[in-house]
Image 1: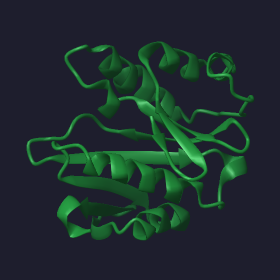
Image 2: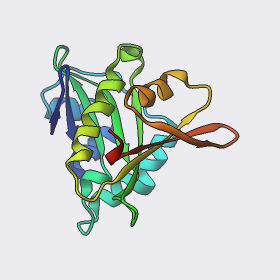
Image 3: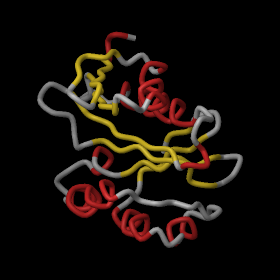
Image 4: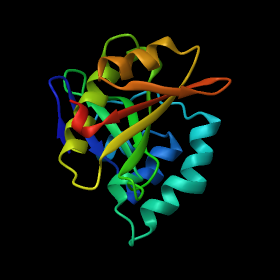
Length: 170
């Protein structure tokens, strides 16, 4: 668990991920949280079923690098967004992150704070040497989160900007 000024970042266990995927407020009940209106995109649903849940179930892997880390607002006692990694660091010590804020909590600086909190955790992980992320070119809010957290744009594709944070760079 990671604590920031306004948030608690909690890695979900296998059983909690199953509840999260249902979107039926059973996870909030288990965590003693106020109900959140979570909608899971088709992409996230597919990732949960095909990658995230199977990887968290695999006891040979460190689940902290595969699970969803949910962000809980201390003030509202409610889940406000999520961050996940796409598996353990590769041989170069790189990991990739993805994140999202629930609609009602967007444009309040929460995701910047979530990424900042996770970056502090990454810095304490010996295996992590750099953090990668990709953002849609039209999603200004998403890439502003990375800029505020000192990521550098390192490339682009037709629709995406690619970002990197080197651990020794800050």
